[in-house]
Figure 1: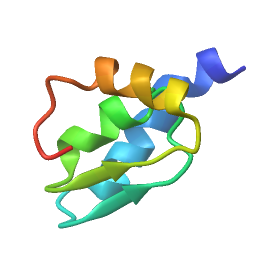
Figure 2: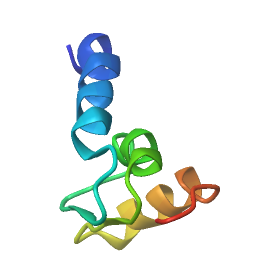
Figure 3: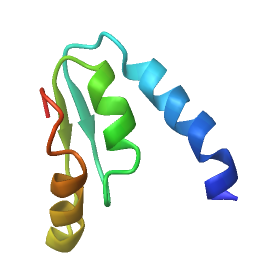
Length: 67
């Protein structure tokens, strides 16, 4: 179900942060949402308790500015 609805959910998150000065994403996991939403906010911070998840997130979002 997530795969089918993911594009519309990611678009909704991106629209909700568009133009905001500061965004904090908690429990960002591997950055699936982060990679879509971070480009629409001026400053975006993504956190997760798992270092292995953050390693994937960093690789996935390495080209984004403001992250």
